[in-house]
Image 1 (tube, helix red, strand yellow):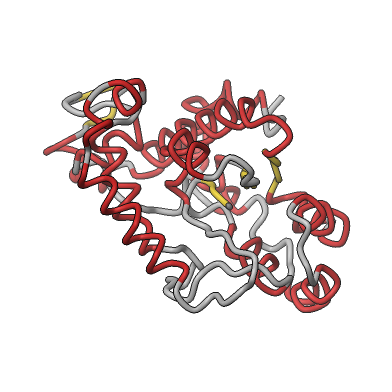
Image 2: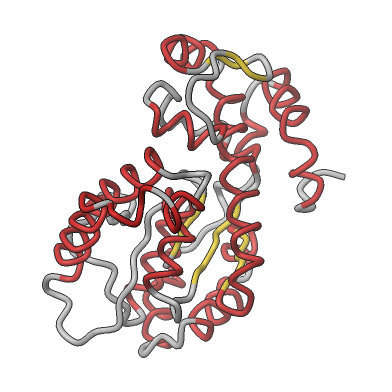
Amino acid sequence: MIFNKSHSGSRLLARLVEESGIWLGDDLNDSRDAHGLLRLVRYTVEHYYPDYDRLWRGDGRNDGALVGLLVGAFADHLRGRGDRRWGWKLCETVYVLPLIDFLFPEARYIHLIRDGRDVAFSDHVAPVEPFWQKVYIDAVGVRRWRGLFFGAMGQIGYRLDSSRYNAQHWVNSVELGRRYGGMLRERYLEVRYEALCRNFADEGRRVLDFIAAPAAEAGLEAIGPTVTTDAIGKFRRHNRLRVAAVTRYARPLLTTLGYTD
């Protein structure tokens, strides 16, 4: 299963996995996301995240709606796969990893991470709806935090300064993925977008070995010629003041990951 902050370049990773013999579904959007599973993720996040204790010991024990979503979403996703090994790519799956790990205790997880400064200048969805508020800051009902507006004012704030919102989204997604990943131990693999593009043969093989892809060589040969490094460091094409603001906002994580010194 592939997850990442949106606009982290995961389409490249998904294409590699697909060309290497892994079924990711046939109802996919242009980014190769299994958007049919989003309704399950959205429901789970809105009702339980980040307090999954309620899922195991509280309301979740009798949640027939969740069970129905689980059965329906995965039945739809697996339709047409035959006997092929399978998985999916969906950015927001990171927010429901405790549930997914419970359902598929032998699954393997690939977390793609990209420089947050590049991600900050690719717009996504404003934190207006409860689902997206949780995706950004783990809570619903917060009107303003760290200079950013959420809820009813979130759309206006996002239009005025989307890059800092995207930086907040990146920080929350990446930190959560790494925390959950640490608990998954050997079933979690962290991949850097920059390394994948600059050293595709080795990094691509590392990914495919991790998931024991049945047609690894075919996948590497098919995708390798299409890989470029043109999008790495694209934040440098933007206004320096906006870049500086994003860097200040996300500096602790950027530094932890080695993107800034």
